[in-house]
Length: 291
Ligand SMILES: [Zn+2]
Image 1 (cartoon, rainbow, N blue to C red):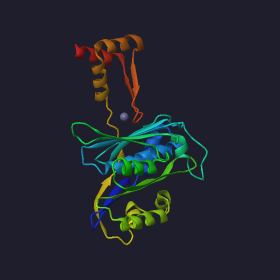
Image 2: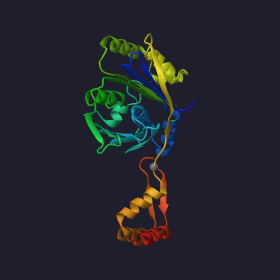
Image 3: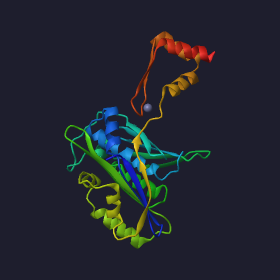
Image 4: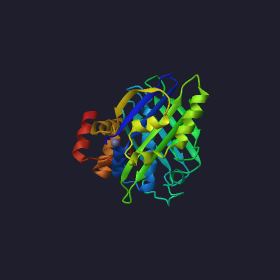
């Protein structure tokens, strides 16, 4: 099944529901970054959370999530665009902790002490910034806490990444449910009951259920309609041209120093781990262009 997201709204237009499957893009990120199992689960949940947050934006807008904690992963950064693409990385990919209560210990990897910072580029003059303390470090509850506390939109979030023994991602996805004002508390209680009674997202996906099926469970007995289905993918915006631009910004004397000291310029993109090597003649051409 391809990665995709479904967005629905209740007939009363007071609750939005999103659900997605991200198995392919999370496994792609695992391969690119060489993440160990606990790091894969943490990155996968954050990428999936980013896709859900990104789906609330308009095309051209962007949201970045930064999790920093006192655990061995240190930091996760995810950027999602309003068009269904996402990119992201963990600072320390080689993190694998013993399971906790039979689950991958994502909270232990990130750490219980730390912050979630959300930056939204809405193409206005200044980006919007919100910051909350980590709630559990398990990602889903941290995003729900952020949305409820910082944006004042009561939200429920579920995220899950399931790994095979060999580390491959065989199921990944999530859901996000938001209550729009005016709040209908009876309806919110009913949704909370449905969500609490549901099997974990990874269980549902492994049983062959789709994002549509997950939403059908969340909204059981509540009339709603689908407003959007979108494809999701991992995509990074880095390119040779962008690295050239960064070198040009450094200035010709800095680039001449690189040529003298290092001969080649070698850099990897944090977000996708793609490696760029600029040989001496390429650097010399850039210096000539700068003069
Ligand atoms: Zn990149």
